[in-house]
Amino acid sequence: MNIKALFSLFSFLIIMAVPAQKQEFRAPDYSLIKKNIEDKKSEFYYPELLKRLQRSDTLLTGNQYRHLYFGYTFQKEYKPYKTSNKAEEMTKYYRGEGITEKDVPAGIKLFREALEENPFDLRAMNYLVYMYRLVKDENMAQKTASNFHGLLGAILASGDGMKCETAFHVISVTDEYVLLNTFQMAMKSQSLTGKCDYIVFEKDQYKVPGLYFDISRFYGKILD
Image 1 (cartoon, one colour):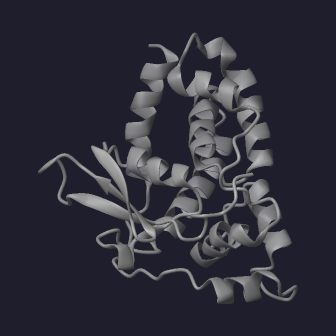
Image 2 (tube, rainbow, N blue to C red; image 1 turned 30 degrees about the vertical axis):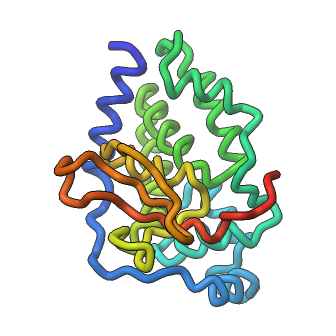
């Protein structure tokens, strides 16, 4: 089985690992998040939270992941339109172009470096879990998967996606596609509706006709 086929299987399995989401949701209060992440005495103090994420701390709480994900927009490193200088190499792995299992160790190094550059590249994080499992490093696979699920959970807890007013909040357009891919949902089209991206599905393909994503946090920002 080649790398691409293995990843398709893994993508199906990781869906089973995503924790069931409660129906309650709450849009991010950016003013409160900013206050909390700047408070050195707070459990949400950003420099410390980010260190915990980068060392794959599995004890982070849902609220801490919420502050990590949405709090990143207050950091000078936050550049929602920036493309990684490793993007071309990473794309070869995503597409499975000429990639075999002997390339996995180099891939792990590549994706770890990408996450050092952008700790919230959810697609890279998801793929890194898969590669850890290929080399049977279950410890790192579980730790990285825990971080992935925690950050994805922050998005899922921010809305229900049924209308723009209750949209899922994201800090990057690519996170919309990560969520869709995680749940194996294929889009038909995409349009801008107010402050939201609206992803349309084929008629009767899923239980909902589409999903709304609130992109107000980065829409209109100057390209980096």
